[in-house]
Image (cartoon, rainbow, N blue to C red; front, side):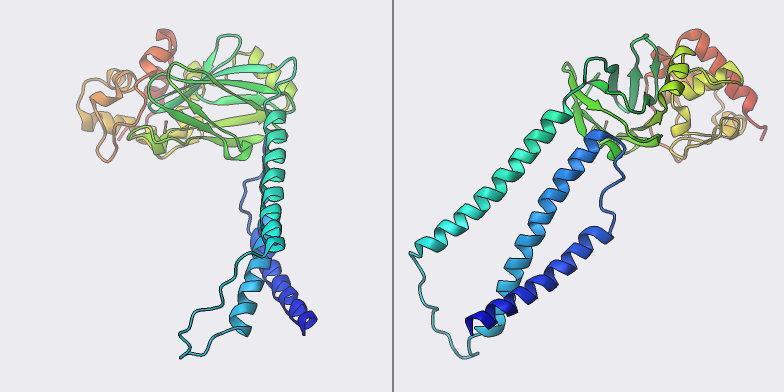
Length: 333
Ligand code: CUA
């Protein structure tokens, strides 16, 4: 009889375990890991998930078995027997959770320690957050609106903020780190696959929070060296195109000649029509004003989310190149 009960409970536990395992593995809950640190963090997730599946299956099996076998009659309102003082049982149900929690703590601590190792020769990049944009400054002093890093090398990000609290997150790299005004936080990333992935602000930082995005491009080391040497210039095209790309304009704006398809801000292929609608002077002056003080005129249907930083961030000569490029590229209405 007892043996039969244990077999029945085990059978229910196996079914519950199979269903939960299917839900955990068949649905891609986690983004693909694009770095060594992310791979380790995913390991911690799976370690805790497997333990959870086992605990859940045993608990649900005992629960179902109890409801099934020990159901009281509908008119039985008496209290159940008082159960107290089963020392062996109490030791077991204290020891098992202690062992589980301790093992998860140890695995997490090891992963945290490994993930903070930057090696002897990391690439150092300063990450600056401000309402509502990211900028990335390289050891050669150049600053870009998106992050480019080599595959296979440790990159140490020095993260800070100019105004409020933001938080740096690349889902495929798993780690999140707050960007605090007046303080510097660090994370180490060691990319394992090439590609372009989103950089997301994951701390509510104001009206443009949801739009505070950039991207990280992971390239082969040789390509990265060439990129860094060339100053991150676009290989060909008008100088204004390079300024457009360096400042990440394409993540928010559409511009056919730059192959940009952003939808957050106005479509820059329609600048001439926009300028006519805005009625704020000649086209080039309107474009310049819209970059330096975007809050001065906000196109209908949009809100004040464009960073107010480009006036200071882009040197005057580069700004002129960008204005000329945008003015030349715009179609007439
Ligand atoms: Cu910056 Cu949210």
